[in-house]
Length: 225
Image 1 (spheres, rainbow, N blue to C red):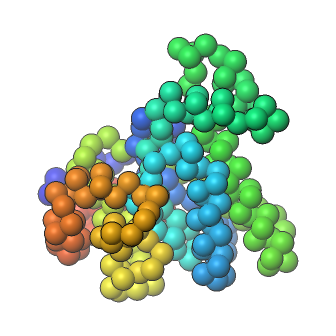
Image 2: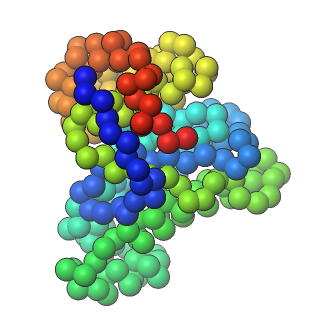
């Protein structure tokens, strides 16, 4: 198992077809969720604001932060989605991007803005429910470009093993708020399950990798929190 080089840039540009490790945490280590209903709402809002722009391969929701492995959709799909939105639903940044000729579009500002819209939507609902004020999330959110299939495999393990790292659940493969069990299941999912299993070589290889990859020294350079 080859060691992953240190990524260096934690605020890289988001570009079409790029793979990214997405991470964010709360300010002052506040709780990000106070109930399972909050976690479900968080995932629902993620789906609403971001799934049209992204494909999701793995995730884990922790007490004060989260991790996602995502891929940005290609430029044609991004354009198609924005064009399908009613004019009144398009943000200023989205309108500006569409006004550019296709060869001049960069997409980063639209994508980064969509993450912020997601964070704001969840934070406003949480503030209202919990009677709090102010920013809930740290800014800017962190993202690391993923450049190889080996990096993807190790990152998926790291994301799934976070509950053990943070002493939430030693048997992290049973943690209910990560994608591990969903990837092994046959139920309906928005995750890119078949692609993940392909990267590992099937369900058995996926399980074996997670069982064997227990040495945190091998993935120190993946830690961005």
